[in-house]
Amino acid sequence: MKKTAFVTGANKGIGFEIVKQLGEAGWKVLLGARNTQLGEAAVAQLTSKGLDVEFVAIDMTDLKSIEQAADTINKNHRELTLLINNAGMPGAFSRSFTDTKEEDLRNAFEVNFFGTFRLNQRLFPLIKANEGTVVNVSTDMASLDHMQNAAFTLNAFDYNSSKTANNAMTLSMAYEVRDNGAQVFAVTPGFTTTDLNGNAAGGKSKEAAAAIIVGYATDGKRHNGEFLDEKGVFAW
Ligand SMILES: NC(=O)c1ccc[n+]([C@@H]2O[C@H](COP(=O)([O-])OP(=O)(O)OC[C@H]3O[C@@H](n4cnc5c(N)ncnc54)[C@H](OP(=O)(O)O)[C@@H]3O)[C@@H](O)[C@H]2O)c1
Image (tube, rainbow, N blue to C red; front, side, top):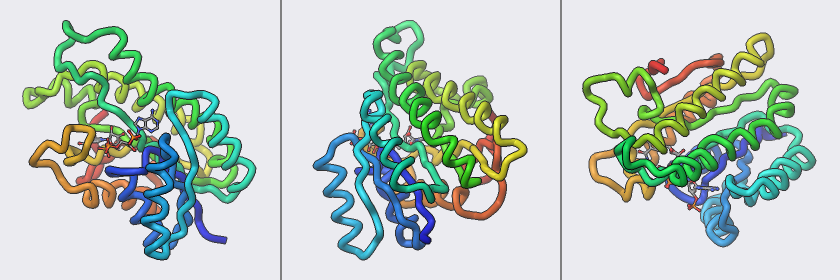
C-alpha cells in the first residue's frame, strides 16, 4: 500500500508545493483546504500531472469541519503515516504589543494553535499506532531565542505567540511518543514569498520552502522533539 500523508492549508502557497513534492515522490496525499472550490481546483491541477491526490475539506476555525476531516481519515485512510499541519494565518500582524487587539490575538490562536490542537488530538492515536510523523509548520518568529536576538524586528505579538504556543504543543506531543516509533517535530521554512506576507520580495520560493519541510518529513531520520530550519536544529 502507498504511503499516505495529510497536508492542511494546501490549496496554495507552501502547502500546495508540499503536496506536489510528496506526490512526485510517490505518496498518496490528502490535500486539505477550507474552500472546496479552491481545494478541488488544486487537486485537479495535481491529478492532471498523474499525482495521487484527494481533497479533504477542513476549516481550522470550525470544530465540526475538523471532526469531519479527522473522521474521514480515521475511517478511510487508516494507513496514514504523515500529518503536516501547514495551515496558518498571520493575524493582524500589528508589529506592536501595545497595539495588539485581543480579537486579533484570538483569531491567530484559533487557526495557528487551537485548530491545529484539535486536529492533532483527533489524528494522533492513528499516527502513534502507525509509528508515523507529525510536522507542525512553525516560523523563526515563534522562537523565544530569536525574539531576544538583537536582529529581531518583526514584533507581531499575535502571530508570533500563536506559533510559540504551537511549538509548545510540538514538545508536549513529542514527549508523549518519546518511547514510541512515532515522532513529532516543528520546521520553520524561513521567510518565503507567499500570500501570507502579501508576496513580499526577498523571500525564498514556495518550492524551496516546501522542500525543507518535505526533506525532514521523509529523510528516514528520527527528529522527535526537534525544531528545524533549513540548516538543521533551530533554537526554541
Ligand atoms: N511565508 C512565510 O514567510 C512563512 C514563514 C514561516 C512559516 N510560515 C508558515 O507556513 C505555513 C504556510 O504559509 P504560506 O506562507 O504558504 O501562506 P499562504 O500562502 O497564505 O497559505 C496559507 C494556507 O493556510 C490556509 N488557511 C488559513 N486559514 C485557514 C483556516 N482557518 N482553515 C484552513 N486553512 C486555512 C490558507 O487557505 P485559504 O487560501 O483558504 O486562505 C492557505 O491554504 C503557515 O503555517 C505559515 O505560518 C510561512
